[in-house]
Amino acid sequence: MSTETSGTLPLTSEQNIVASRQLVRTLCQQLKFSLVDQTKMITAASELSRNTLVHGGGGRMRWEFLESNGRRGLQLHFEDDGPGIADMKLALTDGWTSGGGMGLGLPGSKRLVNDFDVQSAPGQGTRVSITRWK
Image 1: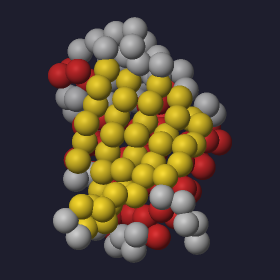
Image 2 (image 1 turned 90 degrees about the vertical axis):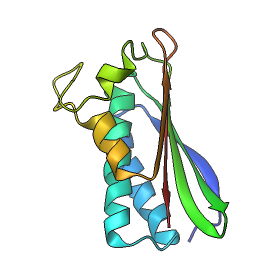
Image 3 (image 1 turned 30 degrees about the horizontal axis):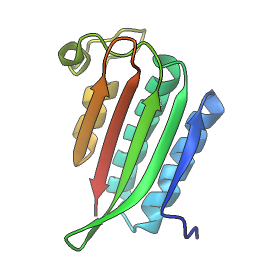
Image 4 (image 1 turned 30 degrees about the vertical axis):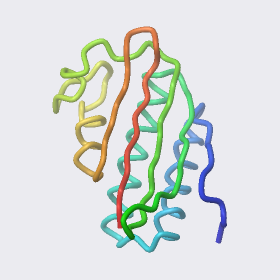
C-alpha cells in the first residue's frame, strides 16, 4: 500500500486512461470506499480522463487525499491546456457534445461525486476538480 498522499499522472494516451482508472481504484480502496463509491469515482475519473485527452489534447490528473471534520476523501484534478470550453452552461447539459460521444461526460461526472468544480475559458484550457468523501 502506498503511503503517498498526492501525486500526478499524465493523460497523453489511451493507456494513461486505463492507468488513471487503475490508480483511482487503488486510492479508493486505500480509503476503504464502498464498492458503489469506488465505481462512481472510477467512472467519473474515466470520463474526465478521456475528456482531457480527446478535447483538451492531453494533460494530467493530479490526486490528493483530504481530511476535513473527521472525514476522509479523494480529490482528483484534471488539467489541460487545450482550447477550453466556450459555453459552460451548454457543456454541462445532458446530451450536448462537442464530439461524437453521448454528451454525458461532464454532467454525468458531476452527478457521481460529492463536490464538482470546473474552470475553463476559450484558449485557456480546462481544470475540473472532483471530490468523493467517505
